Image (cartoon, rainbow, N blue to C red; front, side, top):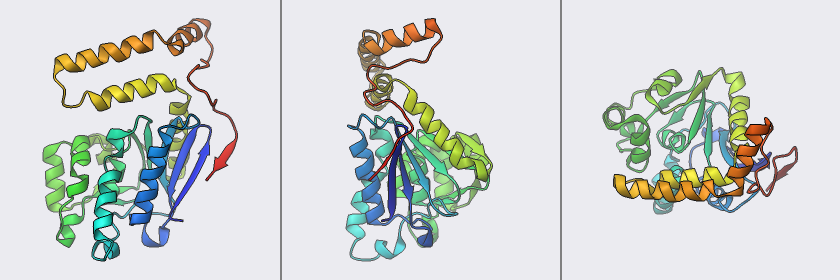
Length: 263
């Protein structure tokens, strides 16, 4: 299996497991990630999704052996699905970049709503080096880095480091390599403790307000806000705040615990 899937404390962890291939994105791995994230949308026991990697490289990008083989068309289709997950998921995606992320690896990092990177992690849009352009990851990377910087990085293929990624907005937290896995898991666990209803409504607003006029976005915000303010979760949240205790969200049908399940 090129992807290990486990679920602990309402965190669905997806671990890239092709260290011998520097976790290159072949069709099997991409399809498994897409399937797991889509499936998680309807799973009450999943509050957040953590994408991590086994080995010293987070992801070296597209599997070039498949890219020039009979699976090229299949790979393109699954890449399109993979590199739009961040804009579609109503459950927060946390990415743990423990090492280099190159080409499509940068596109995978850009799917993260929260990205934790090791100090030694490096990033580069390397497609130009093999006579290609980062077409499929461009939009999500541009959303994180901005149009001018994304264009320059695509043209030059140059490498930048984790602290630059932090300054530019691709990365949200940087920490020493020995701490990066624990830090990312802690972030994912904290997200999974929040009201599932509030997160789903908030993520829906972020997704559905894109491209709308200010008036239409305002109407959407008012509708979603009204639903939340009339919800049992909001009433419980206010009560917990006043009583200085942790909230027990009615919408969290499966409470965070110490159990572990894998599939």
